[in-house]
Amino acid sequence: MQVRSYFYNTVYVPFRDGRYEDGLNGASNYRTYQTPAGFRRVYDYIIRVLDGISGAKGELANNQELRNRYRIALARLDITVQYQAARKVLDQDLANGIRSALREISVALQRGDAETAARNAEALRLALDAVLAYKIVAGRGEEEEEFL
Image (cartoon, rainbow, N blue to C red; front, side, top):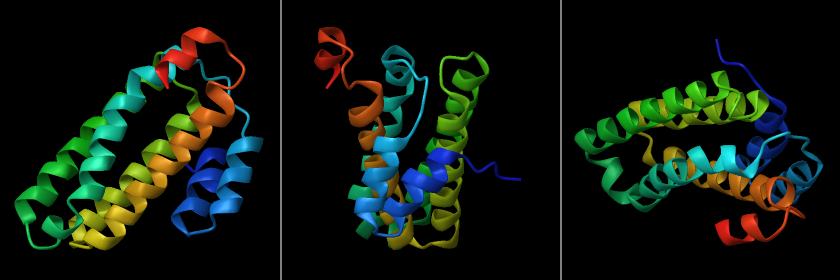
């Protein structure tokens, strides 16, 4: 059973559905107690996989082995996100939303729907970037500016 989160419903879904203004509004209104250091632990790893899926859209359509490799990477991400949430390093709502979005991408890859997988990966990237910019880093000082 997938756990839906406020992040999933108000930030990720609008980006996924092409409602970019709604996604930006959702990110600016999103309440999280996530620290930049905790987010940093998973952000880079997630983004690498998402960018790989987005960039390999054409190859994914006809390459089952590549789709399976990305599905394994998504499973690893899911485990990492769950682990960091259990350790209270990653905000639970954010973790639940990320995990739900990762599952959507994995299901699309399993079905061989490279277009949807790439679109959802791009949407999750936008959602994470927006939350990072609007909530996690905004107004926190020089240390976090270095991260961007």
